[in-house]
Amino acid sequence: MQFPHPDARILPHKISCPSSPSKTTSNELSRIVGSLVGLAVGDALGASVEFRPRQYLVDHPTQDMQSGGTWGLQAGQWTDDTSMALCLASSLIICHGFNSYDQMVRYKWWYKKGFLSSTGECFDIGNTTRTSLDEFCRRQNMLKHHFQGFTDEQIDNLSLEQVRSVPGFDEYCGVSQQVGNGPLMRLAPVPLFYFRQPQDAVKYAGDSARLTHGDIRAIDACRYYAALIVATIHGESKEQLLHERFYENHRGWFESVELHPEVLGVARGSYRKRSGYEEGIRGISYIVNTLEAALWAFWSDENCFEKGVLKAVNLGDDTDTTAAVYGQLAGAFYTVAGIPEEWASKLYANTLIICVAESLYADGSQSRNDMVKQQQQQKQTMMQPQNQITTQKTQFNQSHGSFATNPQTSPVVKMDRIGYGPQAARTQVQPQSQTHSAVNSDTDNTYNRKQKIKVDPSTLPPAGRPSGQ
Image (cartoon, helix red, strand yellow):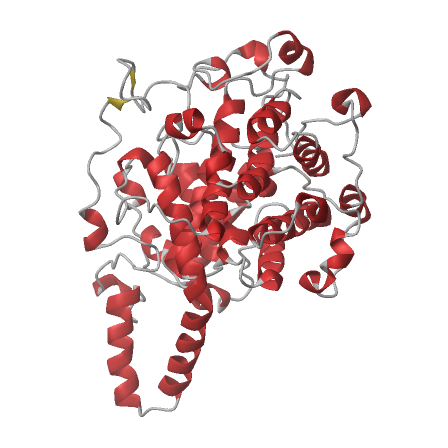
């Protein structure tokens, strides 16, 4: 699967898929598609009432996707939760596995260029995520100093091995006390890609959090939730998933790293509160609260995705993220068929989301074999004469975008690793600067990516978005 060049500013609904979404009856695939669609549906349902307090939603409960509200979106459009999840998914697909530098590059593209945003612009970014991405941009200046003469695009296209050869560079920009729910809202692609290797899924879930949020509570919340999603894809029952000894029963997946006590408390069942909000369940941006709220909604949803996701939204506050986190697990459990068709069909860029989910399923099965082959090829190259090495370097540069020792005279190569190139260019139908039809082609409403995002001030806390995310 190919993704457009970030500078082309192709809106997600204009990105062509390699083929129409399949009609497969594979149970694993239907769970994987359900998880990613569930994330986006939850995000879209909560978007219009994001930051609304609980009492507002008691008086005006959300029952369907709505236009307007906090961000002035159309019904079915999604926010940063889905955008960042798609950035993460695109990296896993294009890199055939976990590439931490590439992930941060793609998050930066979203932040700076609106890559994979439903409006073509970055909006709803959490303060912690913004801080970490600003730090990443600063650290890329270190790479520019090391790779003299490289363009910004060439710096973005560096391989993981190249950036890690630079003394002092580290793509992991999260620090302690960053406990927002940003890494949990975007998590699903990691366990969906690695569900066949549960230990890898859990490990990389933690690593994905560390890129922007360095606190152990954020890391462990993602590790635990990834394990739940993997177990769901493997067909475990709701009773098994919510068992107070789930962590102990899957201890091998977590290797020797214990869960933080607060996360372990949630795993032990702190979310089992019949009255929900009245007993302390909160849909706020602190990641442990978000984890608890999503599991409360799953535990109390009466085996119905629709009921659970609306429970998550109607907790108030960080409505889109609570619902998106619920949707990742519940969508996998109930499968895509369990998500109301009305919502799935109204979801913005739903075809792209399904194609991405299918690619995660297909490419994840190949990732380990590809890694082994690459390692073998690297060993063979090291053992060959210098003239053969030079030839292979030229071939590698042409196909992967590494650059010769004189970058000033080297052409900019759009790398297959990054996922755009001559083939991808053929899929880029329409630039974002043009007005395009709304999510529902049945309506006459249109919007333009350059319009100013409308924010209802009454919905915002004094300092804007909660700082934790």
